[in-house]
Length: 273
Image (cartoon, rainbow, N blue to C red; front, side, top):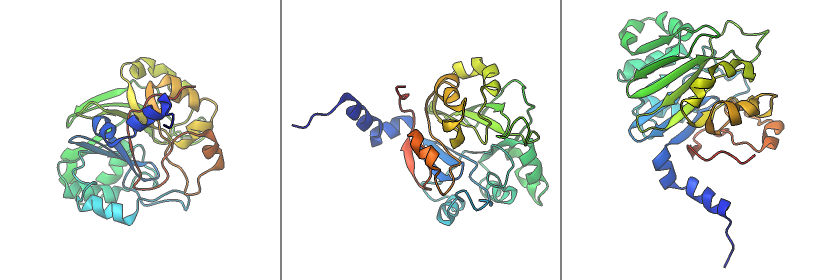
């Protein structure tokens, strides 16, 4: 009889289909685009964009077509979340097209992105679906309860702080789905704890099952501590990974998304340091 360790058994349980049904799942679409699904709730982050800068994964044509055709598993999206209005995260024309087709879907985005959408013809038709968020750096978190989703939003500077991209409204979203699963999408957040420490009460008020940080958090000075200690997350899965996965990222041994269509369960236990 082959010996099986406790940790092997635990991994088997946590990655089983039954575990995914209990805690929800995340499907990678491309770059920082992630679809989160639990029960009747389904949301997407940064899923409509045009520009790969010849570095990052675009959402493949077949997945994009399935989204617009409302074809399972990419159907019945309750909400679209946009972290910031850069071309590898947001395309106003695609978002407007989707919202026009699916009037039940809500958009949560920085005002900078919503302004771009509102500049397009026929944008008034989706005005009731738009939730524009305007936060300055250091503002208190904004909390919303819309479409059965509990949403906390914080403005965290775009990577490059304190010398670059200070005008970019990069939003961190913590979203609890109707079934209770909580996820966090960080956009292109700068990995310095000075941005996160002031919101300690917010992080501690609720456990995040899975956080989706940009991959550079894993091998930056403060990023690992932010993920393992500060934000109160059970696990972190890296996104914004280039098509050529950096060797330094591989060497961290941390989980990350790099293949569109890849799906994993949420809410695994924290790694033992």
